[in-house]
Length: 622
Image 1 (cartoon, rainbow, N blue to C red):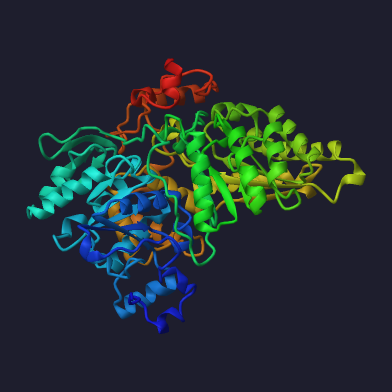
Image 2 (image 1 turned 90 degrees about the horizontal axis):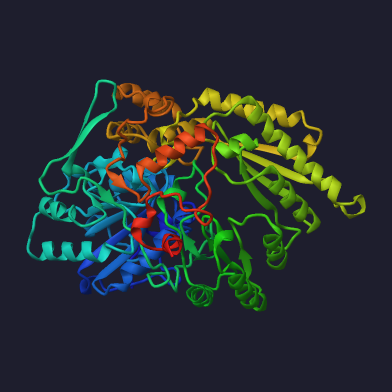
């Protein structure tokens, strides 16, 4: 019988104690004495967010398939328990065994969002692990980071021993075997890190140094030892149909953000939107086989008892076998009253027909993501969506019984003008007008509801917009005000609701996204001043962050408001995500000229992904 790390008195005083007790359906228990490696897999956010992440479920399942490894889960304690753990000196523990994370061999942290950086320090701090990698000893776990934010790991490089660049399924076995051999032979921690740096996809930041020019840009980056790789290429799964995928995902006791079975149907995206980091990082497109998806859909539903299944993809409509897969799922799910969730679908006749079959029309809304208000600006960002397509999709939706439409836009995109902002309001108004033109009065149950939401554009590494400037907080708020004013001036304004994102958080995310090693000191000091859960607006302290930048002598505007020169060396240039810098630069210049690039199915653009010899790139070659 396990002994819980938290006693009943503490559990009764914190919000949602089920976050901390483990023992969920399909969680994996092993005998700690019979494994060689103990791995704590951490999502540095609250349990409900972390439990909704597919990547953690895949790695958890993969590592636990290794007989010599026990992988357990760790999440950030919520603020109430955080305070108690510090006061009572309770060390951070893993859910399965309830053992202290400090005693594990590895602490793996998936880094999905820049605003979780202080939560990473919270996890290390509560675990009793030195925050800086240089201060750790043989008594501390190896701290390894993965996930999309590791494509610019430099702002948090001081806190990690290793980074795994790319998809986790390919190199973990090799890394763990190396660790086992070093542990058996008594190899010091520093020597293990040197050996690990030679494993493809592994980056050891302490083995490299960076020098800067007087203007703050990078002068050069050099390895501290001979033989270390100059460039680290991402790891990629070539065959996504015959690789690790959980048949028995862990089922939480409490409701989480994504409380459903998640079926990843493909990786990558053909679309090439110039603002989208994921669309570049996960190239080339690789589809899972229909047979594999059918098999796993049935098994996961049986093994979890979930009442909903969601298809996961950056662009589900582009999956070649989507009609066949949906026919199968509809047949299987109808008999068991299981709902099918279909995110990332283009709104066309086929998609609406499918949604009519699988959704309760009265309860659902349809989502369009035009991203920009004018066709000119949609061409700049290479969105590949015309206004006529949007309006036709809306018409089909209204004819099909929908009366609520969500629209997503970005403000502050490169080359944006006041006319583009006015275009957001005008497009909303036109869609509302389509409803009244399409649906006869006697069939209406009320007004059409148009919900327009704007986020603020944040340039990200490994996108064509990595050279672009970002707006200031004041610019962002002015643009949101212009949007709201323009919507209020529309004929159908009563049918349109407008929401916008927090401007100060967007600016900080932009700083972290394109930051360099100088930000490590800022993040550390901000955490020491109490910054935590920065991704949650009620806890974000913008003034504290700005004060900390000043104390550290770091100018936040350096990372945001300036447009980069073509030849500038970026902090992440030593990484190779498969898409070449030359291709991204060409796309940046095409964006400024308003030129569109065809998607991968229409024409290969020579982005660099073909070198992996898999997925859509192989089909093109044929």
